[in-house]
Length: 160
View 1: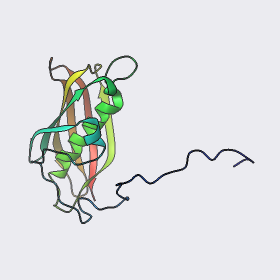
View 2: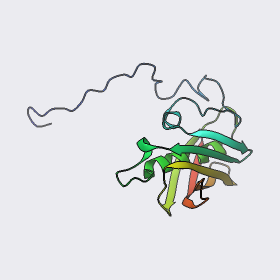
View 3: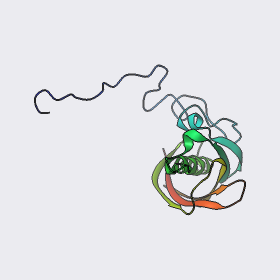
View 4: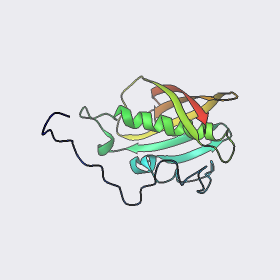
C-alpha cells in the first residue's frame, strides 16, 4: 500500500452470520429435503426464490421479478436469473447426494436468450448425468405468463 492510502471499508461481522463451514447441512445443522417450502435463509431467500415442485433429480423454482430485481433497462438482472438457475440446479443435484452432502458449484454456463420481464419467472432443472465425483445438471428459465424461454444453462456440481 502506498503511503497514506485509505485501506477501504472495514469488514464488519454481520450479526447472526454463520462462519464459513458451518453450521448448516452437512455441518451439524438440520438436513434439507426436496419438500422444503423454504430454501433456507440466505441469498436465495433474500431475493425471493420459492420452491414449486421437485422429485428425485429434478426441481422447479420460481421468483416474482419486481422492481428491485431489474437492471437500468427495466429487464430482470442477469445475476438474478443466474442465481435462480444455480439454486435450481444445486437443489436438483442435491437430490442425488447422500444426506450429509451438499452441492458445490464447479461450473455454471448460462445462455441468455431473451430479456426477462417483471412478473413470474420459473427455472426447471434436471440431473443430466450422475458420475462418481460430479453431477451434471441442465436448466431452463421461462417467463411464466408467456412460457417464453429466457435462458438455458448447464452446470457441474460436486458433492462436499
